[in-house]
Length: 348
Image (tube, rainbow, N blue to C red; front, side, top):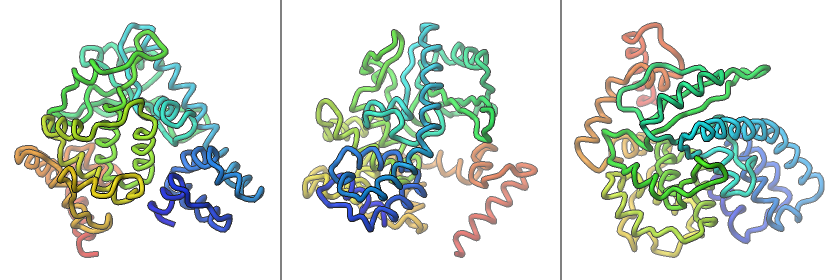
């Protein structure tokens, strides 16, 4: 089973044959989308068409995720309330807040941390508040980054509870996103100083987030479709693309829209990409053509491409560790190991 097959089962009239449930469950678990799949299936008649043992198997698999997601949701609410109580404006991004809004259930989407958007002038105050609540600050700030992160050990778990505090959506040296406009369009929420992104801004942010991960998971496709389905007003794509041109995110947004339409052609009108003159050739994810397209041809300005190329050739310590997937003994040794890894990948 592949991404397109799963999306068709979730969003079209295609029936789920009981023989498919084990392959669907296996795929959903391996891709980290079981809560999304289970929640969406349960709302349709397709779930009821499954025999009892298949329903029970899906439910039991979902329960493995549910307790952790419920705990994360409760802890996230506590953090946001604490920030709001200090009269700091905050917008939760992704996670349980996103799942509650667009799936109708805080446990409907797998997550491992809490992402928050804060005004730049409130970063220090928010940082002090989180550290007073027992969170530890992660590695030193990286020049040009748009977020900082904190973590708190969880008793009995090897994975800590993490909070990422954002003041932007993308690096400032590769975009020109108007964050003031994001805050002006934000919608009041359930707490005095808590806000939500507008539906258009949510779709915009979700596109950019999916691009950052090269649209390498079905969860990004599901997230985008849910926003499109649940938005109070239809997303104005012409307006979105004009905005992307102004903010130098046009190639990133069109990259995501091409991938989305490619995997969910049933969700868009025929000729959707052509009508906006944004159709582009996509390459299989596991090829170097796809890597080069994503890594170096996703920028609207030559200077932005050059900035990214320099970062790729000479990464900072944090990015180096992330690409190596371990911490090298020294920076120079890490660079040598990184290029060996890249070369091995090319030869394969």
